[in-house]
Length: 239
Image (cartoon, rainbow, N blue to C red):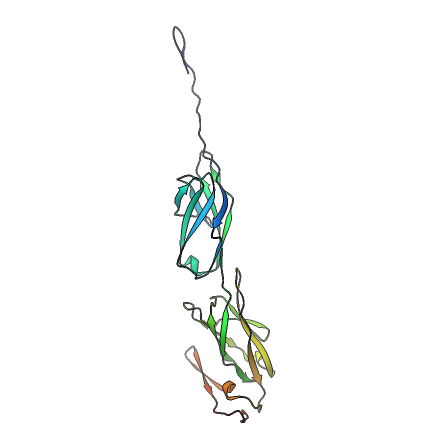
């Protein structure tokens, strides 16, 4: 401030600071997606007090954003993030003076519900040797497990790219008693679930059983199993 003469003069200085506001997120859209469903995904973040130089942090890492307005910004996710299940914390940070970090919203990439169409083999001899069991279907998570005779078994081999085949080693200790056993695949959370059940039959030695489930021999070539069907008929006892 300056007063005119005679006398007068300039006052001392005071600094006026215009501070940036504290951002606040009201919603994100979409809030979730299935793993592998898309290769690119735009996420819109809505709220208040967004600035052109605001930072968007995804699990603590600064990611490129598109500033739309003081109430809206967007980010784009791509593979490999969209191909793997998980949760991502999203917040917006305004630089100083003032500013600060917003509240957190969570974006979730869910595992799908698996579909098992067939298991192979579908039968074995009780008390026999261990073998590879292959499940065919779709939407198999890379870290899924197969439930067989009370045990959750991780994959020995799998087709991660297509998510349609899952192979596990069934130890001889799990096939000691004749009977029918439910087999299903479980995708872990987030999302995920159990597939429908398939029946695996453990037959006693000498028991008569159908040609379609008469798999008596197993061979291993490198790490890939293949099975040989015993040439039996519906009225032939498997020895």
